[in-house]
Length: 449
Ligand code: NDP
Image (cartoon, rainbow, N blue to C red; front, top):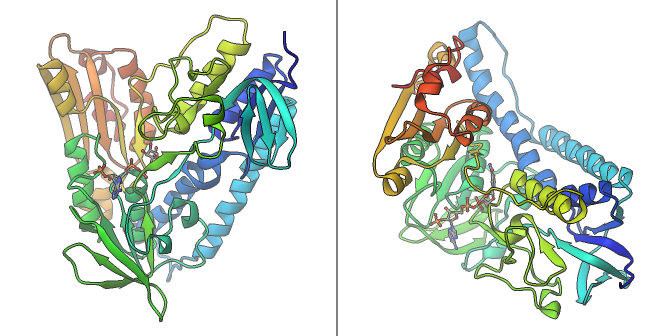
């Protein structure tokens, strides 16, 4: 048997790579990981974690507005972006440290540099060091995609949004997905004028139509402007600062910031995948089997680089399953990619699990839809007109819940628990048999008609 430097060499220390490396090492493997940016990857450094902190910061805008109705008088509250930005970035550094500690405490060797596969079982690091590994795991994630438009280099992506020196007075966000809607809410709450520009006529494709409509209606009421079926023609710097932007069928306008959020592309370039013949799919993603193995017997891939489901908890599960299956004592197992709950941290957030009403009708034929359209108690007292919407989709043949969809404050928190029930195959009758906790928003889950 060949003698390798490592049992496992992981390229990329994001959510999937860190979990896989740590677990493989815990199973007794000799593991190294290479990371060219920062340990933690997109989620920790420039994604979910700092984004959620900004969402919290943004929510204060409404809470401070509403607080008077609850008896609080706060004179002239001021928002300071730099304070929030720097506190968020400091916490990101703290979490990066925790991730690094976890790897080190499991004796995973960390190379803070780029790595490339240069031959069979062989990896060359940016420093020139060459190492060998029995198995290689690619966990390099994805990067923001940029649209085709003149002056695209003047726009930012979510990567840069956390580092802005000042908040834009006027921002145009391209895209209608997760990132576009989340940052539209964040910037809008901080007082920026926000225009969201989408190439199609639908926001958040894949989410239930009624919720998408509700988010659009609430977002417009909050002052966010939407342009559908619109593309960028050019972006040009303006001498006085900011940019001139020309959208299709619109006059040129001046804005302070353009942000692109039009999807993410798997990071497969410059990894030497062609050297060893790793097969890629149409979107440049690494093709893998159910055990995250590529067509090359000793090379595996997990997370966004495989473009299965671009979500952190999925990458973590894939990393865990890979490490347990390949280095553990138990039976190999694969990740179940069905019925994955998700959330959009818009203002208010959306959360969802299972089939939308449209999907269920197409797949099952007979469905029963239950709904609760209500104004949360807090909004009533605050004088906010904003209404929440819960939907439950059931298979008419056996009453089984096949989807739950919510748009409401704290919807993602409620959904995590509700998703267990849907995954477990519970029925509407099971929910009906559960006593409500009153007064909560979540009680609507067991009171839907
Ligand atoms: P999404 O895939 O959510 O949305 C992409 C949007 O950009 C869609 O509206 C799409 O339109 C549009 N689009 C795609 N290509 C172009 C183009 N060339 N020109 C103009 N518009 C285009 O992507 P995001 O960038 O928002 O997020 C990337 C991924 O990151 C998500 O898929 C998600 O998995 C993950 N993510 C998850 C979060 C969460 O869990 N809360 C938060 C942030 C990101 P169309 O519908 O017509 O295709």
